Length: 353
Image (cartoon, rainbow, N blue to C red):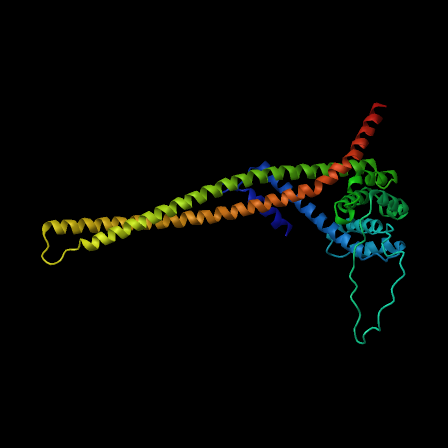
């Protein structure tokens, strides 16, 4: 499916008449772009599933979380991303342990009205996610579970997985409130030695590369969309002109057929009548041929218009998908940047010393 999605976006950017055969360098760049896109989509799908699983672990004793996360991440649907999935499940479960006081906490529980109906069967409990927490609350619960997270962060790969899980959580509905404090959330991972400077630099480079790749793809999609709009408008204009010419040719054919009918000679025609009949038949044949040609042109123009409309819709979908991805990812880059700017500046100060 990921390959099909990538191919669809690329195909939407191809215009009619483009040569699909790329130069070796361009082909290599395209393949790398498609590979990166497949990896991004795989991570997005994995993070979404990890967040869903975390919601179901609301009552789990956190002492059992490492083993439970490992067990859940072993599912074949995670494939090569099982390690990332285990970390994502762990972090998302912990971030959902922020205490939340509801309006009903101070009220006495109501007694059930009446007796339960016999044979009613067991009720299906709907799993509902906890309310979003603030960045300060997220930092607090991360600190409180430092030992569990540290045990899971047993190397650079695990630390990178933790950062990617934090990014995905901040960009999710459950992390929306904490998103403006993304820099502070990343900072606490650094303060607790859950992410080293090297891994943080690697993570930020990946974020930057992804943002640059999306921006480049979005620009190409905008250009493809603009070109598709121009081509669709030109095709619509050509189809309308062809329809007008077809209607005109039809009218001329009807006139020519009527005139040829009137010019038919009866018995013992004069030389002039024979000449007029012959001319009328020739004119009718010419009108029929022109009408047939106009029909063919109209059909071809209509076919082209249908194809251009399909290309335009594909370009719109590709542009909307890329615009949505950029709009979704940008807030994290904006809100996390202060921490990474500080980290880079600290490195510069160390170099000066």
